[in-house]
Image 1 (cartoon, one colour):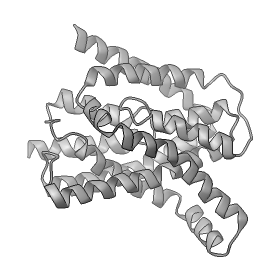
Image 2 (cartoon, rainbow, N blue to C red):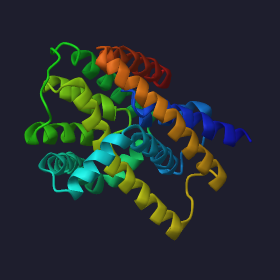
Image 3 (cartoon, rainbow, N blue to C red):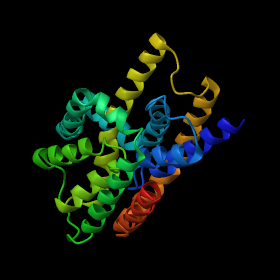
Image 4 (cartoon, rainbow, N blue to C red):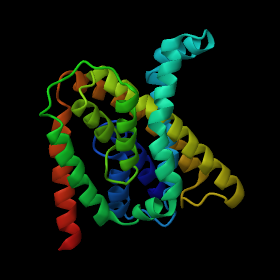
Length: 262
């Protein structure tokens, strides 16, 4: 029962932090460390919880996705361009994911690294407040640059939404467009990683240290919490309060780093 409650807590943390620019993976690593939850299973539990937040993205942007799919089927140039931009943004993360898979998974077992990465995330978010809000749309070059920012965020402690939306601010991308591109760009990656994990489970069995029931409940909780978290973030972004999360990341990174080093 104790482990079950811990998994639910981690699912709530995942749902809240996946979309807020505070690094969900970083919070999961630190939470597992301080809660005493076994981390020997690598990133398996994190992947299941990330799959839950994938559902949040699909649900939140369901109308836009339906329009894009309809547009692609009808051969509309704008819809096809949007899909190609999404795929372009995924390429850097795919390259990094396959070439550094073992190193990235090992990073989940080193909370000190996560604390340092949170400090870097905090500084970047604060810096993203200074460029003036732009009204540009995502283009081929800007899409690739944002994709590179997403690839950097595969390190736990580096916020994916913080990196991509923050980079969008530096590039002068309109806030709503930045959020939409950022989260829909993550959907194919989350789907691919989740699929690979399911295939591994079929071959080697569950290696997360949690039961199947716990994983299913964690998946559901992260999906529901993630939906409302995403809705809140889009609202904050449009009101110009995105950068304030940088203060939070910087504080958490510094406090946990001190706790690990003393």
